Amino acid sequence: MVEMEDISIAFGGIHAVEGASLNLFPGEVVALLGHNGAGKSTLIKILSGAYRRDGGEIRVGGRPAAIANPRDAKALGIETIYQTLALADNVDAAANLFLGREILTPWGTLDDAAMEAEARKVMGRLNPNFRRFKEPVKALSGGQRQSVAIARAILFNARILIMDEPTAALGPQETAQVGELVKELKKDGIGIFLISHDIHDVFELADRVVVMKNGKVVGEAQTSAVTKDEVLGMIILGKCPPGARPGPGAMAD
Ligand SMILES: Nc1ncnc2c1ncn2[C@@H]1O[C@H](COP(=O)(O)OP(=O)(O)O)[C@@H](O)[C@H]1O
Ligand SMILES: [Mg+2]
Image 1 (tube, rainbow, N blue to C red):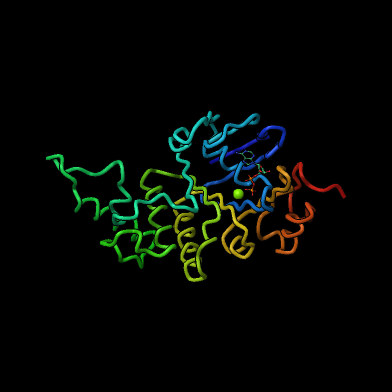
Image 2 (cartoon, protein in one colour):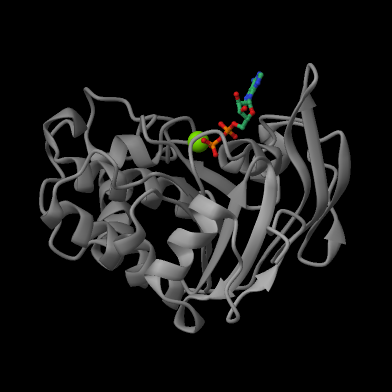
């Protein structure tokens, strides 16, 4: 779905990301890990069109992708679910799903029934326990708001989702709910980049882990091929264990 190759970007003299490569397959969850300032958000913002890379190649679906702004990324099916979810607080889930592309009746008025039916269909798959269709989204829990934001992205034909710290502000039950959501999305072949500080979440949800340090990729591994301690060693020391493939940022032995 996505191949980022040898990506670099500098701000002033600071190499925020240097020679980083990252890819994603359909239905795969790839976790991006590393300390604050490691370059995770910057690398992913190059994919979402928020920053323009200084060097490197991006291919989406095998084709070179000139992503210069967020619109380009969205047109390629790439959507970011931000921590501060961009929802309209005072209207309900259906209105949020169709914000800016409302379904109209033949008379040009809002077709609320059609939008609610469609909202129930999408939300019913992503979050079957969701019942609060008539309430403004500000009344919803963090996990429910998250599912509305993701449903909106899916309705916009997103195939590649970027989730930056999706469970940072959520309690254990809500975090589990987001986990269920991720599993549903995988079944549909949606690919997900998951940026997370929570190594337990990562081991629960990610198929593969990629660790960054000082702007460089330390290494990548199938989650099943490494232990939590080994991944912590990658994050803290930049030490690549035997089960991982070293990147340019791996500490020399
Ligand atoms: N817009 C920017 N201007 C200047 N420096 C930036 C900007 N964005 C990120 N950086 C710098 O790039 C480095 C990587 O940051 P970031 O990608 O946010 O790390 P992470 O998400 O892993 O915590 C940091 O040194 C940060 O200060
Ligand atoms: Mg960040």
